[in-house]
Image (cartoon, rainbow, N blue to C red):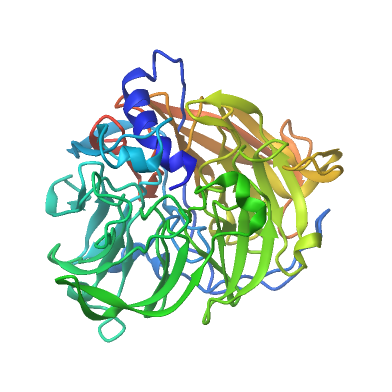
Length: 551
């Protein structure tokens, strides 16, 4: 895994016990939901300081929240990583239930090498971690969560009661987010749903062991294993699986930390090492080039792939954002940043990519890049928002989680395009995607004169690697300070005391953000939450998974 991944056992164990001692404060935001998204995005160009290309997005299957089916299919919801749940978002936060996850052992990391940690130094982590967002299915009118935990368990949990329906045992801790796919031969039959997620490789097993297969398919109905996807040994120093699968019809695109990106058929399998493995249709090996020599073996692919147009984009720990043909997985576009890239790229409804950048292996700051992949990589930067440097755990700054956007929550085009993210420097940021400030900034590698977006809101919430989510007109964010915060986004007439921005339809509105609720309890939070009809669901490092809301 990346440095962030290989050091996380020490970070998780240490911070879970000492977050208060190191004075880390965190926040969780939440959002209220409006009507479901329209069938397609309007094609009318949006007046903006920046040129925009409007992309049609089909109505998601989640649009009817009361219908049975897969509601949140993968990390950050859908193929563009832009759907985070259905409101309303609660502004009163009480514990409605909590489910015990417990803890499990994994290889110790930190200053020791990944290979050294394979033979000793086992540690115990508790609860859920990065990215740790649950998937959600409605079956027979009842909601069920799919949750991976540090106890080595993948669980199906009744979302009303918090009771575990079944638990499947992995060989190691689970850090990623489950993805759920429907069998194309029986798309409405929950007994044919598959839950796909990965774990660390299975410590204390050696990095060279021939039977490492941490990414697996489990039947949603029974919790029985369907298959295991082997992870090869490469120049990368990891064979874990942190990323969440991208579901594309009957197939899935899966990245693993050896650097491989696969297109698989999850419902066609063959024998492997006494188990079954899915049919691999296409594959690519993404380990960077000679510019990543300073990374050593830190070339891991731990982010989740995203779909924009006919390309799949994925960030690599080797310092690249790759654009690959969605069918053949041939690299067609390669944007080099140079940093260890951990977070998942998010595709926007105007055809751009939001890329979180960690502060490592680069001269400048980490932060967030907005890229236009319709242009050559040398011309693709739209803007860069730098975040502050900060020595926190084993990080030096930047953004480890991902961004969220309000694209799915503006059906009447009355809102500006917004993005939210949390940084290692301790702050939650909300920025305007379409409008840039009068000043310019230096880029991640010291490039001069880059545009930077208008800052809408900034709050000191402590260090965080969790992704804040925007649902309707709320934000929910969590981090290393034992708190979950809900923020409300409000809109008023221009110059109404907030930050004045243009909406998608060209009107000018004043935007204000304020915190309206805070839950203090549990442990530290590394996982990303979801919202569904008045409830916030999130796992904590204290060994529990929480359902929060008003009674």
